[in-house]
Length: 302
View (tube, rainbow, N blue to C red):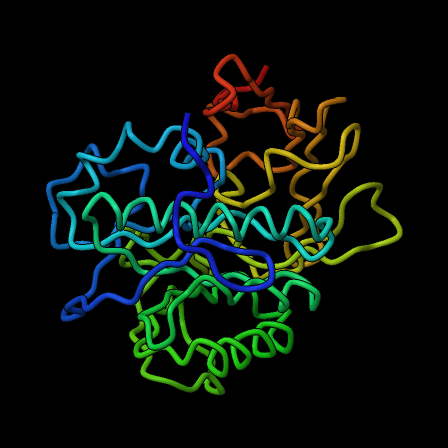
């Protein structure tokens, strides 16, 4: 059993400190945490811009992947989801897990780059803590185009508070973003091609805004396209609630949560770009929580 307070902590909420490290950032390339066992591109940096269920085990059971992670140039801290409508306590816990994993990996001799994530304005009280000033940091602009003003508010606060030496930006930076920015191309990182519509398949990475029409959830107004398989909703939320995602004003997914707040069912309103496996639209996917650290969503229609 890990002691969760074994690292130096800072700030009002005593978040574990991720220390500043010198890391070469020439020819930066990223690889998803879910691909580390399938790749020998050890010059890459491991990222967590993925569905939370694909990496929740890095907090619950971090020892399993230590040897695999050691082989790579560096590791970003996990990007645990922080939605605007989440209770502040959950936003704080997401930040704590991000920093704890970073401090733990550094203790294991792995070079770490903090991923910075903010939720609502209240989160500004803690979401920039636990990162040593002058550090290299990582952010993402994927899915936040329609929340640009809020993103920039947090981004500028991050510049003021952390004063990062360099900023790895996963996705196209906004023109207003200042600092020494290293752009990482989303499509190239994920080996994606443009669709006929000229849009990339994208991972939703942004903010959920509260809407009165959605019980226990909200509309995800990030700019999303392509395969909803990669669009992010949390695997845990308010018990017996429903969260909904929209793309360009069109509903693409409902996620239902059980009495424990765990995802139990998705109703998807697209064929995921794969009509052979998903001939029915809408269709359902169910969640298997046999392994609490690694819940699995069924891949085919149930």
